[in-house]
Amino acid sequence: MKLFFLNSLLFFSLNLSAQSVSFIKSWSLPPTQKIKKLKIGGLSGCVQEGAYIYFISDDRGGEGGARMIRFPWNAETENLEVNAGESILIANPDSKKILDLEGIGFSKNQFLLSNEGDLNKKPRQKPELFWVNRKGQRTSEIVLDPEFLPNLTGEQTQGIQNNLGFEGLNVDNGLQIWGAFLEGPVIKSAGTAADHLMLIEGGVDQNRIHKKWKYPLPQYEQSATTMALGVTDFLYVTDQQLLVLERGVELSLQGLSYNVQLCSAKKSANGFLERQCKYQFNHDKSLLAAIKKTTNFEGLCWVNEKKTHFLVVSDNNFSKNENTLFLLYKLN
Image (spheres, rainbow, N blue to C red):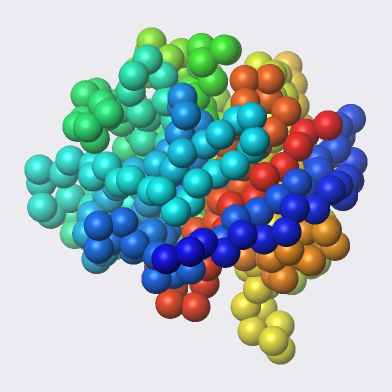
């Protein structure tokens, strides 16, 4: 099936702290697109490695199981060949274990994956950060601190909230660091949650957390009615500055719509991340001329070593009515 290629549009810029971002072009895949009888959908994170961009699908099993999907990437022509996809299943020997995969990174011939688990199960299934080889076989995992792990039974008094775990994930091989970002705040006690999100970090050769950063609760700058705003992905610009993707939903007379923004976050000496959000996707006229409406953007990845161009990907939740979108941006 032929892909739908949307117009190349140059350039619409908005201030992002001291920098700006420019939308370049986009690709779209219909919800019927398949690889070996498995639908392409639920893409929640990405990483460029070699001549490919790898995406993680958060399929919990209904469409065939958790998997990575890769498309060829031509850096010279800035072309993503979305009609030439391949899939790699993630091994899951335990049939009762839920793999709700949301983030992906790469280092030293291995992929780092984030699994949100399932807190609706009895007993609750905990979140995980774990490494797999190129065949999708698990090799090791990150040791998470108890504050991120829910108690398995009874009323929940600690840990991540359900479906609000480590949604954002980035491995920066130049900085030799991995980072994982919570989508929502952890539970501090029964019925109460923290007043901030959290970024955890470790060295690429370490399977333990060596640093934690507090991030303000996200707020959409253009609307007071946006609900459930959280961090869905991020990138290291430098070791001190991050590019953060925040997404929420808004309820209006027209129904539910997505509000998504890019933020710049800077590390401070007191363990906090200072945040500025100056780019809203649904206020970029160039972007909307190409994609018509803002959707469920969940993934970010650099597509060159100089960190000047990055890709944004949407999660269509395997909806029959939503395309999967890929947006190419330039960081000026």
